[in-house]
Image (tube, rainbow, N blue to C red; front, side):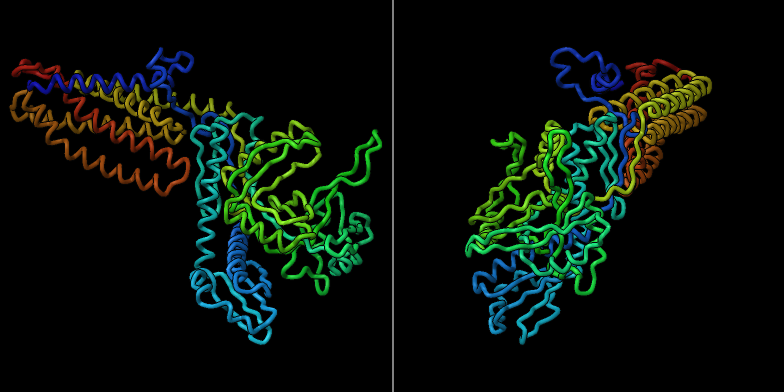
Length: 593
């Protein structure tokens, strides 16, 4: 036998030792390896959602909101550029896709020249230009709408992944399926379900919108309030900081936000909400506590400008803080340079007006702008509920703001909770089926191929060892389809050995020596085995690339099994045959096969 036999022995021995060390933390989780080994080989094989229980969620992505946010950003940018040349204009968003630019002096429409528009040719299409009224209407390009929808899905997946990682969930599955996002979180405890669902679903879309106070429209709406007592029209009085004049407006108040939304949805004709306005809702307390009964909680309306002049897209940082007066948690945020510039312009043009801070379609607060402010602000968490719960809510809000806002709101379409008892039962049955199948294969190989069959059994065992070690090294999640992939790999390993053995027997029948027959059998069978494995490998890549969670779990074990099977059935098996036959010359004249 050639000198390389010793090198092969060292190589195969080292690989086997590494596999045992990588698999030890998974096999004996309560007995970590000592010292240095425990630090290096600490990764464990994880169990998937179907084996250890967890949470399965399907979210629908509100693409319309992502498109409107994109249009608002384009409008804000366009407004900033035009403001450098003239201030006598207004810009609003209408519907989902239109930007309406109105010059108070039609002659100034020329200010919107090619130098400005070259930045928007790819994003906006001009659909109307009226030189008599000074109105120019733009519409976002259809290709941009498709791009925004695709971005909303891709960025939504990455944002959710960042939030889930903060919970330490091992091997979460977060994938796109059509226009939905599928989230599978194995190993979660039932007490964590509600919190992680809240964190995942929190859009964290921060918007700043100017309140339209003193509008005669609200008086008309208040007059149309039904007399069933669910909704009240209440006065709101403010003093103009510049003139000192008092302004009064009516707003709507109800205990249930749904009652307000249902009423507003019925407004039509003269009462229809203007195209450049929308209603916002803030949770408030009204009435006073008498010591025995708490003040009532409910919702009130604000009439807002529809377009968000500044959004959380420009957020640079967020931190947890405490209000010095109320000792309640709050979130401090800082805008980047562009966001600070937009905030300064927005607040400078609206001193004395209210600015609503809207977080996830809910008004957090609506403070009055007393002076121009820059890129810093505060989000209060309100005065309701358990202080510890409010603190946890503030911490979660900081986490989601730091990981980035979802580009579009999510709506939970489906939820399934898998219990650990079911997972254990599935594991036990799957392991039993694999053991029974392996025992039948081992028995057949030993009876039919005798000593050569014993070599095949050792190679098959090493194959499983290497597979599990690789999966543990990558901290992969083992699922029920993954176990099916392991069983299939065992079958492939046996099939490869049978092909080799039948080749060896054919060579022996021709009268060749044992060593020549073994060498010829392995050499001639190699390409047959290789071709079959390559075909299966390509199929595994396709399954992994286009499949969803369970299919990808099967594909991973299949791909790893193909590599380890080729290694053990060809090279390791051949090395063991060389060991049996002897290291020099043809020591054995017969072979038990």
